Length: 307
Image 1 (tube, helix red, strand yellow):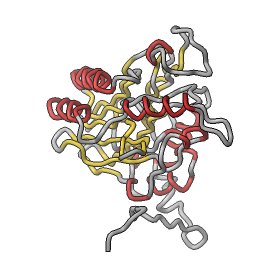
Image 2 (cartoon, helix red, strand yellow):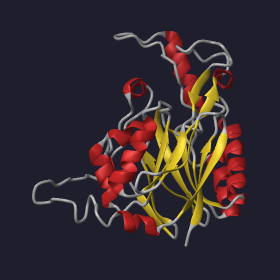
Image 3 (cartoon, rainbow, N blue to C red):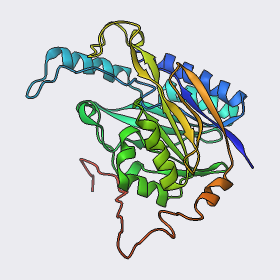
Image 4 (cartoon, rainbow, N blue to C red):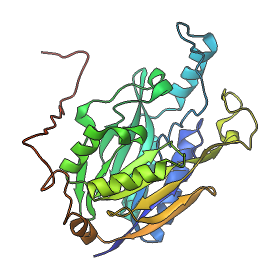
């Protein structure tokens, strides 16, 4: 049985996560009204992706204005038991849709780039924290561990998410394939022309559908306090989108779109996954465990353990 999926190419309101949650919930309802049963949102949608911000941190120094910028960013992050997530869960419950949403998760003083999984019937069913923040992201985001690498078996297929440049980590991809992912979600902030061929490669490597969502957002959305290496012109496009949906043999089913905020749709036939794996199953008949093996530690890593 075929079904419809969607990727939501929308921009956040980086200083107002609650308003962003209302926007995301409205987008989810719009997509569901057009038949979408799975909706994928961009990386760091709630809480914002601080494109171009330096946080006043030249090597060996932390400037006061950088500490102030981090305090503002921390204040704009979300708690998982907060009203923003409740709004999204309500929209999923109303529509019955499954949503994959990028957020900036606040855990004490540390922030994580996180993906939330929301099931229409069950609410929040899990999360994935980005394992490896890229470059300057390491200054503002903590590192995830192997305990948040789940996939979810649904009547649509097996849903999992890998965030932005985590998609360039072969071992992480292999773990996702091993778990049987058929709907591979890739929330991202990468809007370069090279992103689409990366997604096509993953679709062909994993013989899975790939749904990638990136924000389309201008400088105006960030507000006057945001210090950006890209300048202060309100019309400057900070992220230009490029969201897309790809089939298991690399065919682009929707996108990439660079025109503005939009929702992209595609029809999914789950049997295409099996047909594609006829000649290549990377963790099945095409694997060589006598030569290569991957060990994955899925235990949480805590700084303090009570015994």
